[in-house]
Length: 442
Image 1 (cartoon, rainbow, N blue to C red):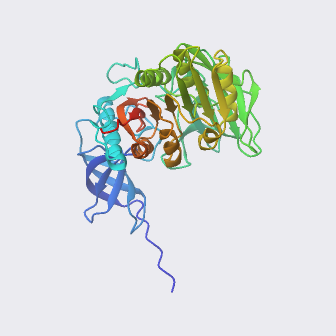
Image 2 (image 1 turned 30 degrees about the vertical axis):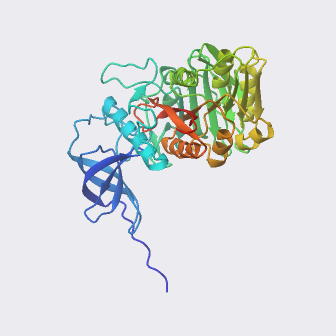
Image 3 (image 1 turned 45 degrees about the horizontal axis):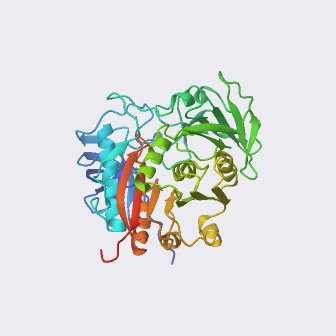
């Protein structure tokens, strides 16, 4: 006997009280029947009408948008961006919250993840609960920060650039992204038509005038002639292998941080906020307190930001080993670190390369893993190396909390945690946790 299809609840509306914030840019509410809702565009303590955007009868939870605010929070403001709101651009989660409230919400999420996944209170993690802005990131009240130095625009079927709607492939056409850095806005991607393109990424390097546009054609799409008002490099993504190839100008941009210039090629990873790299280097070095002559690891090292900072502080008798999986990133790291003879960069996955090195002990470790975190196996290996301090840089508090739990199993405790709001208007944060071995008998 064939089971009856489950009824979709998309479009259903519920009047609900909004509860606590949750990881991912939404808050938790419950219907009168006890059904859990993850509600966007709401704030804790509000009463709203929530319209279901995803879910069906019997589901563990439903996703919804607050389409009408019946009782507003004192932290609510009118979203300054005309493209924010239910069913619109999905890039910013907290346009409707005051900047101070955004940071409090992010802090509550980090604290909840630490407690639930690592069993740590903020005090046990050496954190006062503050979410700090980036170094030097101060704006007048009411002004939207223009921080995003890399913006990937989606292109609709008519060739118009925009941004994806939340959890959708639909494109919200825009005339201007308010959080885009000035150098990105100057490229005018939104004002052009991009026939045959699937996406256009605009990059405005920090500390140099380098500008770059990376084009991803649709199958069979031909690259347009890019004529912009300022010098700009053009790259394209190969539709067959996903490789990035130079069309015009340099294949790289020059980024500046910690007093050094870093080459970043083919649209490779670099922190998006203009002050992020300096902010994170400062936090990591203050936590590690490198000493001359020490041996350090920089894992998931990218183009060598932390490896260079370590090498500079460890001196001529110190040594750094970097490990990075991306081939182009390794090439850039080796170029960027060529003036440090005692720095070596190996290509491959950390969990594969590190055991092959034969290293059994180190003094310092920096790891900046991808969003999924390092994982139990890698953390266990790192804990066995006896580093006097470890700095863990994380863009996802859930992955960080899980890995901090693994480090505790390996005999390490969190000495200090700092949380930075490097992605204003969104739910994202960046964390730097500094760990040290637990003293015997402690």
